[in-house]
Each structure stands twice: as structure tokens, then as C-alpha cells.
Image (cartoon, rainbow, N blue to C red; front, side, top):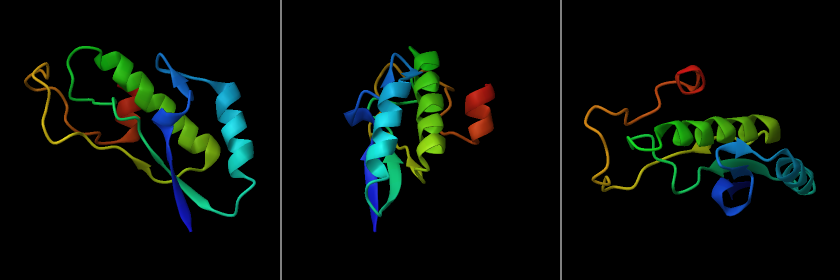
Length: 104
């Protein structure tokens, strides 16, 4: 059995920064149950946006770090069907590799 953890439902990431105390708390809680866990990115994460792109990248990096620390696999990331008007032409619409996201 597998349970999906919504990373946006807990204060695991604030301002793009991982919150270690909450991550440790969640890790201890998850160990109490015999499930496999996956993760779902917060609904506001959208790498297609031109504005705030660095913040979105920071949130994604922190999400990947949480998954690594807590053995959450896979990390589900998807975008809403309609794109906001603020999307810049030519902005990336998908993550090609974790390395690209982390190292730019």
C-alpha cells in the first residue's frame, strides 16, 4: 500500500526554503506506519512562469530534498491545463532532469 503526501499541505517549505524541523517531524510520523510513500508538489509550483521563476526552482529543489530525506518516491509534479497569461514565451515547460533543476 502506498500513501501520497501533499507537500503543500504542511509547512515543509517556506519561501522556497526547506524547514528541517517539520521534515524531521513528518519523517518520524511516517516511520510509524508500514506504507510506501510518494509525494505531490504543492499546487502553486509552476516552472512555466516568468515571474518568480527562481522561487519556483527553489521550491522544486526543496521538494526533491524532502523526497530524498524521507524516501518519498515518486515526486508528482504537473501543471494545470490552462496556463496563466504571465507565462513568458520560451520559458521551460518541463523538467528534463533533476540536475538541470538543481544546477540551473
